[in-house]
Amino acid sequence: MIAAITLCGRISPAPLGSGLDRRFLEQMRDETDASLLGSGTLRHADPEMRGTGGMLPQRLRAFITCSGDIPVQGKKVFASGPAPLVFTAAQRHDDLSARLAGRAEVVTLPAGPGGLSLAAAIAELERRGARSLLIEGGAILNYSALRQRVVDELRVTLTPKLSGDKQAASLADGPAALGSPLLSLQLLSCRPQPSGEIFVHYQVGYEEENA
Image (tube, rainbow, N blue to C red):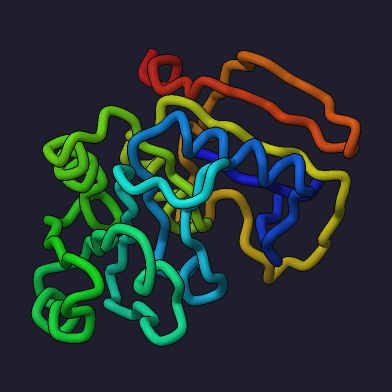
C-alpha cells in the first residue's frame, strides 16, 4: 500500500506530495505488476497509473467499486493504455459491463469482511500474471485492505503539511479499530528528503495482533 499523508494523517485533497514523491510513486509502479484503486479516487481524480517512462503496456490497472459508481466520460484510464479491470459486486456486473463496454473488463467479486473480497481480487490479478500489487487508495479501500489483511508493506510519504479538516479522508477510514485496539507496524526504513518529506516504509504486524 502506498500513500502521501499530511502530518495529521489526511490523504486529501490529493495530490499532497511533491514532484519527488510523484517520481517515487512511478518507480513503485515500475517495480510492481498491478495497481488497485478505489472508485472514489477515480471520481475525484484522473489516474492513469503511469510509470517513470510513461504508460506500462504489460501492467494491470484495476479499480474496485461496491456501488458501481464509476465515472467514464473524460477519464484518461478508459481512453489510453491497456483496458483496466473493474471489480464489483454481482448485482452491479451487468450495468457496469454495459456502461464500460469496450473500455474496461468487469469482474465480479464475492463478499468479504466489510465489503468485497480483496483476496479474490488479488487471486484474479495473480491469475492474469501479477506477482506484486500496489494498492493506491483511497481511504475506504485502504481500510478494507488492512482489515482483510492483504497488505504486507506500507509505504507512506509524510508531507510537511497540515490539514485540520475533520471531513478530509484519512489514510484508512472505517467503522471500527483495525487492531486491539491498534494495528502494529514495524519500521523498515525512514528517509528524509530535501523537499521536507519523509519516505517511511513499514511492515504490517498482523502476527503481533494474533499473539
